[in-house]
Amino acid sequence: MIGTPMSTAIYKYQGAWLVILILAILPISMAPFVYHLKESKNVHIQSTRDQCNEIWQTVCSRAVWQPIGFVYLYNLLQVMNPAWRQYLKTVQNFTNEDLNALLIVSDVLIFVGVLVYKKFFLLWSWRIVYIITTLVAGFFSVLQLFLIEGSTFGLSPFFFALGDEACADFIAGLQFLPMAIIMAQLCPEGSEGASYALFTTVANAAAMSSASISTMLLGIWDVSEEAFVSGDTKGMRNLTLLTSSIAMTGILFVGLLPRDKKDLEALKMGSFTMSKLGGGLF
Image (spheres, rainbow, N blue to C red):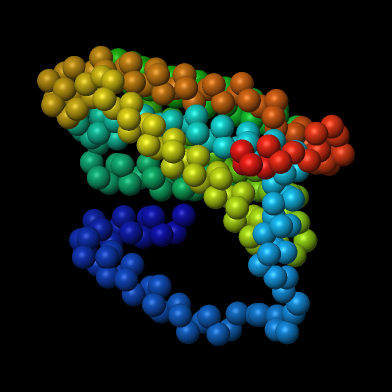
């Protein structure tokens, strides 16, 4: 929330060179403070073999591979419209400052989404949270079609586009905390760091794969800059409808997600509690 507006202001008034210089200096300037980090010494550390075996036993648990499998499938299906920013810049004449303003608001609303979940939805069923947020995100994503058609209900294109961007990132904030809670609950004692890193790697791998799929979708219709300049937005409409539809299909797998902490604990005790097949697929 701080870095984005600062870099935007520096880029606008000083140029890219100062942004690059700061990015190069800041990490180095943090090095001396490493020596002030609290570190436990002379603690017993399991052997690599034992740690790997413990993690293997963890991922074989249904309480792990089922909810984390949902995380992977859901994130994989959250494809974005990769031509959207090009459309805003070419057709709607958004400036770099406008695009950066969208990014700043988005960063703030991710944080707001986390706070809102903690304040109002912490005791809600995780399934209900994902169902509602997916439907709301799909609704706002489809609203992009109105901007493409020039129907913004009296709002400027910037504020209309801001609504979609803000909603998407606010919902990302709402969905973040349930996943963090689940992953924290699943980490075995003694291998918390490695296990949590493994779980988040699965989520990040799905997100990167989703981005690759989004890029591949560019070749279906003509959404090039030349097409936008000539006034051809048919491909943009089709791509928006397709990506919005795919993103909403994640709701079909919500049954894999536990309802709450009690449901998560029940998975550890239920049938097919341990599965080498599930762990292998994970």
